Amino acid sequence: MMNDRSLVQIAFYAALIAALGLLPKVAIPVMGGVPITAQTLGVMLAGVMLGPVRGALAVLLFLFLVALGAPLLAGGRGGLGVFASPSVGFLVGWPIGAFVAGLIMQKTGSLRVLPAAAIAATVGGIGIVYLIGIPGVAFMADLPLMSAAIGSAAYIPGDLIKVAITAVVAETVARGLPRALLSRA
Amino acid sequence: MISLYLPGQSWLHRCPVRLKLLCLAIASLLIFPISDPRLLGIVLIVVVGLYGSLGPQGLRQLKALKPLVSLVVIIFLLHIVAGSWLEGVTAVLRLVVMVLLANLVSITTRMDDMMEAVMPLFAPLRLLGMSPRKPALAVTLVLRFAPVLLSVYSSLREAYQARSGRRTSWRLMAPFLLQSLAMSENVAEALSARGGADGLRQDKA
Image 1 (cartoon, each protein chain N blue to C red):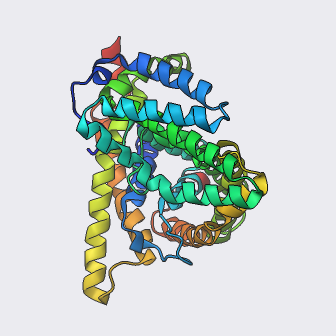
Image 2 (cartoon, rainbow over the protein chains, first blue to last red):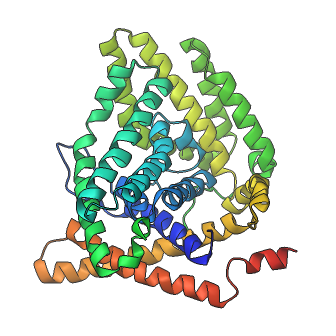
Image 3 (cartoon, rainbow over the protein chains, first blue to last red):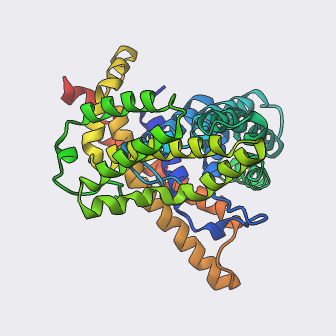
């Protein structure tokens, strides 16, 4: 299954996650002073568009580049340092979230793309990511789970916007370039 | 391609990559359980000293902490709310030390060397009938795609600005993905036309 096309697609979505992190913040509105980066939009898109395995591999490839020393995380962060920072749980949650999002896209084949992508991005891109990210913050920063959850909640409104964008983009691609929606292929 | 790497000839630059990674892993395991803020303070001084040993431009690399500042403040405040400012100090010191230490390896190691050092991790791919060099090809593709994607986006953005007067919009996301996906299909075809990723396996054998 790792033919040339799969390899290129995995690399493409890894690059998309990188490019979305490098875009100026204005690409997406700022909610209540919390800056929203588009990077997790890329994670949601990778899962929704590529399906579970390739989606997760694309995110892992992106994280691998970050670990090698490419400052590709939003704000120009990168290197091994980010894996020692409190937000490491979210980074670990990304590939798993993409996997779950891709799985949901596959299993909801009878649903239209727009609602299916919205559900997939919400469960995978928010639910799973926070499920792993919040205990990560609690562990790394030695905080009670509740405090870590409150500290992380500020980002949820921004993530909901990204869910909406993911759903609209997936629907548009499904119409304009159906074969690119590999999770439904 | 941009990288965190700080060109130089220091002792840490010359140190073998795998040794650096091993020391980092051991140091992290030893530092994480420390709960005495004084001891962590001493460790922090040692780590800053290591940055200093790279010369003045080494100390400037402490800027790696800048994106962490707001996070560290929030964590400290949450600790105060939870009841103990001393635990807050400990947690923050521990985080700063661990991030700085890991970052030290990244700024003194070239990306190519890092890639070379972790290549053996991909050897099991051979069991799946895949070339262990595929991840390296994938990394190269990402590094090539990322700037192309940015330029596709910026030309869409400029056209949008000319039409609407506004700088950018989330509405660009769908055409951005459609255009760049079409481009990626050309790359896949070009790769296959040149023998494909499996060509790697042949020249390895």
